[in-house]
Amino acid sequence: DRGRAAPAVPQGGVGELCVKGPGVMVCYYHNPEATAEVLKDGWLRTGDMARQDEEGFIFLVDRKKDVIISGGENLYPVQIEDFLSAYPKVHDVAVIGLPDARLGEIAAAIIQVKQGMTCTESEIKQFCMDLPRYKRPRKIIFADIPRNPTGKIEKPKLREKYCGVRLVEAQNQAEPPSCPSFFSGADESLRAVFLHSRTGRKRQSVSPVSFLRFFCYFFE
Image 1 (cartoon, one colour):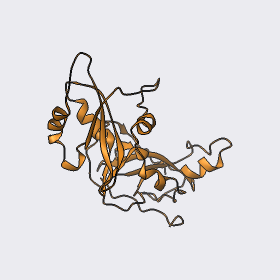
Image 2 (tube, helix red, strand yellow):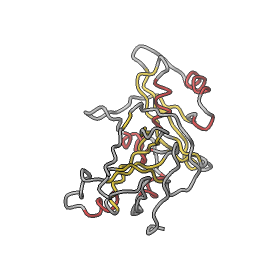
Image 3 (spheres, helix red, strand yellow):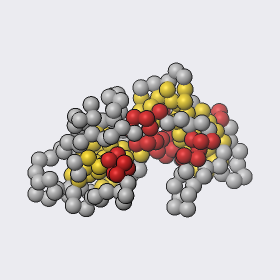
């Protein structure tokens, strides 16, 4: 129901990070459609999936548009990428979702091997045995990883090349609901909240993988 506010995610759970405050943008210039997608009642939906620890620190987990929904489980590509990056022969890696008739999507790891080295699919699969079963990439592709001038992986190009249809994008195109706050107080306070995705699937408690901490200040 678009008119109903989405529930706040319990502490430790993963959800979309939303912010509200005097420093938040007012709109996209001459683009009301794009504005309506990310702003609702003054809340900005950042598109970042995050979790809050018991001390109130916020950890980024992944981008919402990159989340892979496989057999009812939410997979966060950054977690898998960070794990695979530790393999000595891996120079660069990107994880995307590929369509699957049974699971909806599967995780595919595109791996760029270090210059002068060779690597096999069996090596990668053996290394991934330390990952939980549902997080292990089901497809391994050896290829170069495209990055833009800022160093960001160009995942749209990879999805186009490997037919990475995004099932979650159809869910994200609907108008975002209003965002409740964890805290009471003045509307001008800067607050961060988490939203459950529209799928209603159970969230997995995850360890921070970006090691990036955000301090949220609350002004009464």
